Image (tube, rainbow, N blue to C red; front, side, top):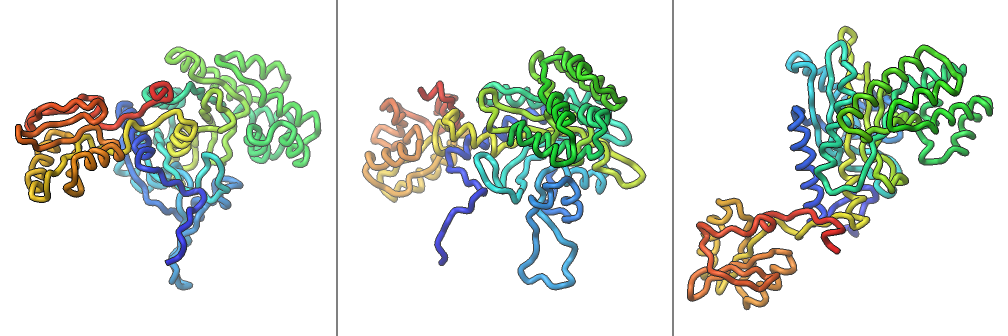
Length: 443
């Protein structure tokens, strides 16, 4: 056998960390369903042609899929999806006759990106998406609703304070057109790198793309504008650039900020440097950062797309937002902000006096499991002290014994041992299943 070595960018959580991830996923899924989103799952592969037409970086990120023994007449080239929005758009086109619009869906799946692995950026990771898509027209009020759903989920999770940054692509597009910039998409892609490479390098890239030094300064002045209310619009107008598309964008973002502040004051921040690198975004765009950890980048992002799903006759505009679950959970675990209360779901270990007791122990386990208590039987009969140590290493809080006085259960943390009946005994609620503990709870 070949030597086993880790593959960079393909994370594998240990059981305790996986417990944290699963509980995050449970909260996210339940919150999505509370807001009326229905679950779907799409295939892992799409035609490369569909995946590659989404921006300058898309081709670099796609993992191609091909049988090792493929012949020249193999079907069209396939690639693993790098997000869940592109396959969702295809899903809508394929199943439009069976869907009721506006269609609200959530999707929690793996995605794959062939990028250079680094802290929190993986080649394989889990995303949790919500989208609302309609036939023909999509009211803007959905662009307010989606960040409110994300905020609802995040408030139920043990994560640090966060901010959701929002912009609309009409603002930079109209501003750039007012400045006479012709390559709007190219300028947007450069500005989208501002947080990663800084203003000086962005200026260099803009001037290398043919912009004058003064025009590049104006582009950066726009990107520096940020506010928690609609005051950003006056700051933009003060720059003296005029264009009808800019006016439309300012009006739309002002409406979004006003509506959001009515329901969740301070949740959204109008941040005019947010652009998003994928070409299918056409309107509002979102990014979410942990306050105090902005250098880590966005943990939740998305936006509006008006023409991604179109069959030539009908266009299905949509808006979506996606939580980078693997990225978020990894950061919290690596910084020691969250841990699992134990390494296993098991709440009770049934000890064995001898192997002859295994059949009775199995019957007890079945009875406890029937009442929702996670149980396992000791792997082998041994001295009780050894079996207790095994439970302790696993993080199992209770050990069940058969004694001459009848069954008893021991809390191995406190040492308390009491008589127990498999038909009625239940561990305390906080011990029934593993939970997430925060840094403050651990200290």
